[in-house]
Image 1 (cartoon, rainbow, N blue to C red):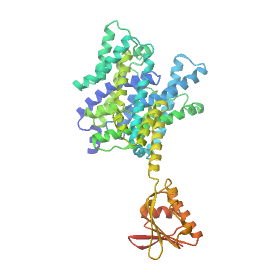
Image 2: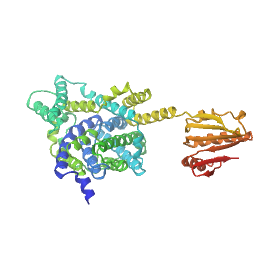
Image 3: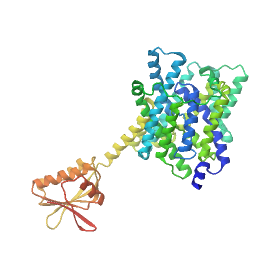
Image 4: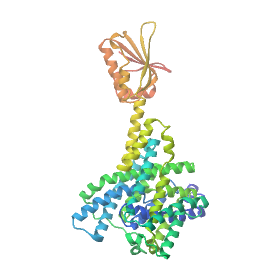
Length: 513
């Protein structure tokens, strides 16, 4: 009971409730902005923020973490909306039916992505986020920041002077106000201030209602709907690659957020539980006409720094957002688009890892290459592929650096030749290992000493097998010394040619006759 109270309420009901209300307001502009990125009605993103936030608040792996519609997922959904639009237009579908059809393809993507994410958590694969190297993380974050900024440029095609003034003014408020006070979210101040100015003066600029009228959704709760394309094989085949990307991007960003909050709170969350909660949230969103999403780093940090450490805070944020959506849609309609663009530009600036520029000249060239490569792939391809590429490149670089096995060669009094190895024996170092031997000129007895080396994988086992057999072909005996318990288990499991005997508890020798 005590553990439940700590995780659900945190430090106090007051802190969790007030923090959750602040986050609820902060979620509105970003949910709307991310909806525009994905080319769908703002209500699709707002409903996603509520549904996903509500489910992850109850089931997530980290109390107080905030989830909703995000830029990283919205960017992937752009391709889905474009393909869906082309497909539907080819079928002669236009107008409102076209918009509704695009949403159905997006919700199908969310359902498939959610299934993948639940599978990742169920098979306990969330722990593999630890394998993502720091340069890849920095590249991922930098690429994401650039993509978010670039996605706003479409709103500037027909921009007038008023729009540019509002954008710069919004950015100024979000930069300067936190230096004075953090009692009120700077984004909220920008929204209220500029919206009132535009509403009360003759200033002309594009409003949210000009792109999508939200008043039609006033008083309406999300409704259950099974997508018409849910069991359409062609539709599934079309969106499945993007569903995989959405799933991976969502898992990566959510687990990175979880890691950040772990450092802040000093308590470790459950990565696998978060994957399952995220997947369930995206599946549910898909059945209620909302877009998929994931954890939101900015809002999660706002919640924690405002005192929202329990599940009640994120639950309050989700419910508070829904109240705003179903009761204040008329007000949301008159918000200038320029404010949202300015907010997203500041989100982009805040997301970018500026310190990576200072580090890039000091870090190893291989790490700098990974950072730049992941950034570029993120911008021109997709986020999940970028992180995967970063992990692969880093793994190959690591393998190359450690693909060195050296040996010290000497003879005992009886003429026995000793090869004393140093370094890991694995797939990357097999070639270097094989180059150490002079089988033709070696004596009748040869000892391979692994005191300072380790057999890491089956490639190392096969390499020892191959050398042993070559010596046998010349009627020479091979003894293998100082294999660790783990090394011997690997070799026994592989049923290699060598056999082992122990003549001393601390000195293990393997004989091959």
